[in-house]
Image (cartoon, rainbow, N blue to C red; front, top):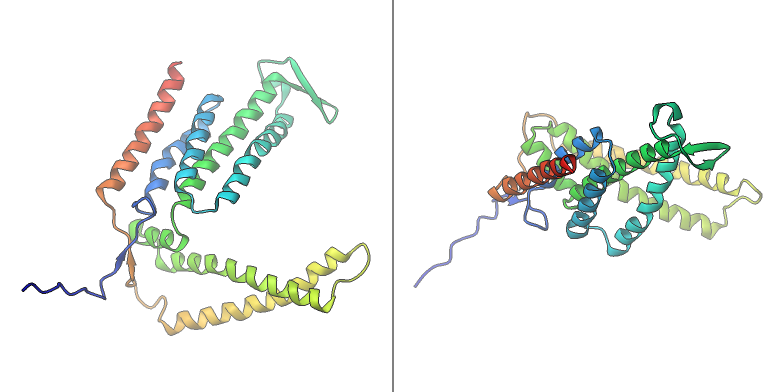
Length: 265
């Protein structure tokens, strides 16, 4: 008769994302592309990486389908607005194509200025899409733990960032409670400055709640001897596997391939 192997309840849990990757894997895979996009000046490379970033976000994103759809729909509008804004800042004397394309705000925009503006907007959109996809694949606390364990970020800095991440949803809940309380008490001041008065009415109790919560967090960290030792034990550990190395290598190869193919065409 065989006996079951006992489970070690004290063994730490290995951190993996939904795709079975380390939280830092996708960041390491897209960083070379993000750096390369800063120095590129054409339109094709940002478009290619924008498509890659959006496709990756659709696969790995943790956000809801509704939020993701809104982001995808708002992205073209943001790109057009940024392209026009950057085109207004371009000196017409510095571009090669000086043909007038359109007039905005009493100023004629040349084809060259619009091209520069579009390239800049697409670069920003592509970098944002790549980093959004890499960031949305991992949970925030697990990402902080991976930074501390892999990149040797001081845990004092890492856990401060982790505490800041956990402040956000708490503040959102407190703000909702304050709004409901003001609505019940009909505390909104009449007149054209209602929104401004309402904002000040929200700020004071929200600030007081933030101070109380910060004090409780500080006392809890002191009680747990936070910062007393050079290292801390973790219930969740990040471990780099061969699959992570393969994904990073694939991302770097794809980045080089895109730049080489576009440069050769």
